Length: 120
Image (cartoon, rainbow, N blue to C red; front, side):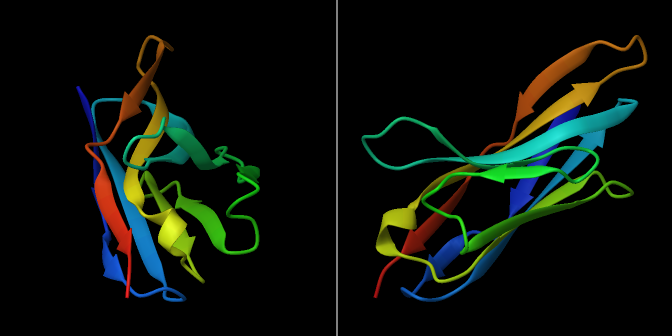
């Protein structure tokens, strides 16, 4: 079984910064693409940013220039650095990972979510 454990959410004022972390643990060979999604109240879950194992990234237009995604393959961990936060960034942020097992099967896993609230 694989677990994704997120941390780093909280309450921050507009213009502030937060850094989210998500670590994968359990029985697997490697973690392929990892990403962050978010879901605001009353809205659908949306992609925030994704990063491949070779560090190729993609992000939503709404966060370009403010958020950056990175990873540490030795720790099976992905990070989301969020700067210049806006109230509209308020949401529950979910980590996502494409995990490969010993039989080369690939499974998508989700974290439990971490809440980010941007408010004065």
